[in-house]
Length: 366
Image (cartoon, rainbow, N blue to C red; front, side, top):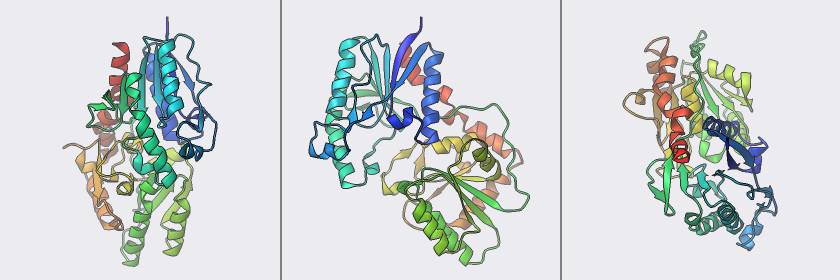
């Protein structure tokens, strides 16, 4: 007889109106639950008030939790949502009351997340979240974090589960490099912490110096910073070298992976986080496609064998040094023609969801 698990996420995630990376992660997690005999039901709160109402009255919520069904027997609840307020705590109390033996896990999609709430209103909501977080210990059995270094959080034991993707047994095709052009790929929601303005400014300096090696940047995605990026490209006359691919998925995205030599992680991490170890889903996807990558800060996939496939740039506002990226690219691809498959397998232990999700599966099976 299958067990029942309620998976609670944002309404956007349930309706698949958020980033493909988030959707993919939720689908992979539920696949893991199904493999160990859980029948999962995805639920999400409905919008109730404008978010600003929460600043005025801390006992109100912009979310309506009444549609989360918990009266029937539930064996487990997995929550992937960063919104902790009074109505949410009441929901947890109700779930625990109706199902005394239920196992409740709460995943912070990112932590700490204060820097993501950059507006004054956002910071007020963060402090409200922080206040109600102290009540989680009465209802939540485990907190799931994608960043290492925490044994407990808010008095609750932590399971460290880095972001991951599904492993593909197929061989990675060698990068297309017949024209001698180096292609960079950045797949993101184009937010302030992605910092791709830094690499555009680096392109401006590189091409102004009349360098010989041609390098092209492909920006795949849409978001708040896209207008700014387009302005910078036009200002520096980089239209031939920075290509805006728009939102990409499926075959279009796969073709970019085949074409490009290096993936770009976030280059503006310092704008929102300080000293955080990065567990980026995008970096895991790059690695699974056999791409070396460029990052700012420290990522959770670095060791003595993988370090040569990672280029770290300064954590500041300086333009990215494009010549160093070119040298990095040449050093990686000078090894051998099958380097992409080597990269894919070398990083596998860091991105294969079957392995990474084991702490959660072991807890539910205990």
